[in-house]
Amino acid sequence: MGSTPISLSASRGAAVAGLNPYQSRFDIWLVMMEQIEPGFCEKNNYQTPEPFDTAATQRGNAFEDGIIEWCEKKAGCEIMAREELFTHEESWGDMTCHTDGVYNTGKMVQSALKIHEAKTVNARYFGTYHWQKPTEELPAGRFPKYYEVQVQHQQICTGINHTILTALVTPFDDATTVIPDEPIKRSIWVNTLAEMGFMYQFHREEKPAARAALLEIYREFMTVNIAKAIPPEPMTETDYKWLHWNFGEIEADKAIVNACAERKSLKKEMKEADERVKALTDQIKRFMADNHADAFKPDTESNGMVILKDGKKIASYTKNKNGAWSFR
Image: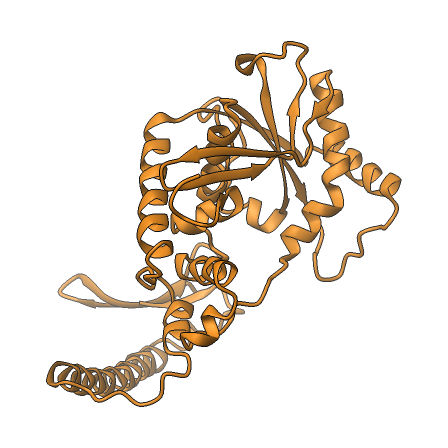
């Protein structure tokens, strides 16, 4: 065990690396400091973080067993070590992880084992840039960076250098869909979605360069921010709110007085500029309307109006490729 009194879990690794969209480094620092020293937040005038449970977490818990069963059938082997704790020791402390499981390939040697990691993803999120199903052009596919961190973290802890991340995509609305309580019905849902093509698998091997960078980030966070109780630099608006919690009045120095004055002046200029842009836009559109009556009638066949100066377009009010009207 290293010099820090608390271990770093895989679920926290992405936040420490600044890649978790749900928790910043400052968030996780507060959580860990409160664990080390109960009352730390109150003592230092921070708001105590509240535990959170996202819809994604609820979906994942609901379909975990069904995904396991599907993966076992596909792989033709049992998935063992479910929720087993693994620990890896570093000079600054311990890294830990709980695996979703490990494929029992029948060859009980590290090189033959594969980690099972399951994710349940909303279809809307799966349709963003963060996800890309494996294709000929991109055989490895793509999934969010904070999952990549989790995968490498787990591989370091287990000593297993191959992970199969299985993603079940749920095409229904989280807010209105009631997930059944009975395990058998949940399994039916998983198999039905898989048969409809909503199950994808991604293979990941160890990435030495990424691991080295990740371990360096961990080392600095644990030896500086945790061991010395120094808050990390704020990254998000929420981080600044944590820092500003219940601190009262602060006397400003000259640089801050000037910064506040300049900010106020710029905001006034921006407001005046926005108002002027709107007035000019209205003037140009009025000119278009007076000279081409169809320009503002989307129910007509007109494609709008273009203003020219010496043959060069200087403004337009036309339909875009989606059929919506746009002024430029």
